[in-house]
Length: 233
Image (cartoon, rainbow, N blue to C red; front, side, top):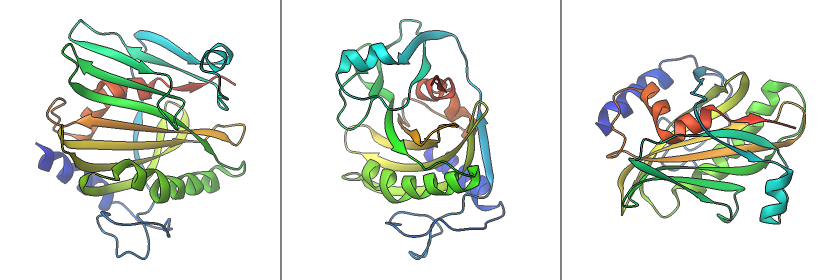
């Protein structure tokens, strides 16, 4: 199953026109990289327009007061409403992130998770901002996300949309010693009006979320939550 999704991702990402390279940084585990430059971000990947049925969660003034630390980008999202087959565990102090949501089975086996991290991207033309976000994701967020895990493989990095907001998406895989093969998605979402932006990281257990196509990843619990993210400031 993992081989199927890897093949689908490779066809979509690397059969499209390539242009300006992101360049620099650690390219270990990067498919199609010669170590001198990273994958292109000049093509469109696919869009997320997820369900709005669920439990609303806001990172707002009240949340900032509750956690006792700055929340530079105010936003809201909707957590998928369960049917009793899974739990949503909210970690409000995940270390380095603003919040983390763990989706787990009733006996607390991880299904997937989503965490939201601060990022600063200077204002300016959106293409410049997306290039800057791509460099941040490839050079910093990706190496940190796969550090300590085996068989990291960067499948692709491209332009993306979350609802109507332009973004950058990185897709990768790695192997977790406890959970086996994992799907990794890192989405960089520049705030439309200010430098304070976010990076969203999702990790999905392949054995718990069997998928045959790329788009099916968006039906995962973390994918549905990601699709609902909107800035509110």
